Length: 133
Image (cartoon, rainbow, N blue to C red):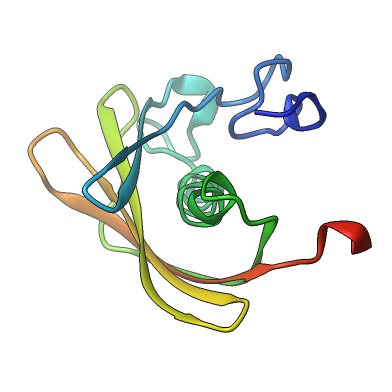
């Protein structure tokens, strides 16, 4: 990752309060693992919905970035299926559903170790011209 992105809240190595996510690609799916602590909770024992949304946003938009596109989220939709508990190893996955021009339709999910999906995401990710950023 480039030095300019080291302060990203989700994946930056230099951000002392960031999530410090790392990623891998498996079978055309982008994946990260994350275990939320008490500092990430909303209600007792439950990951704050904004953190869940951040995980989904990052896995979907960053997949396009990892493939070489300067990508930004144009639209994000999150469906919370059930509370996401803190202290459990979450698997967050994102994949490309379709591409139209410079726009990618993405999908993602947050899963518990037993395979239960706690949240689903859909995003429209735009590749923007590097010179305009």
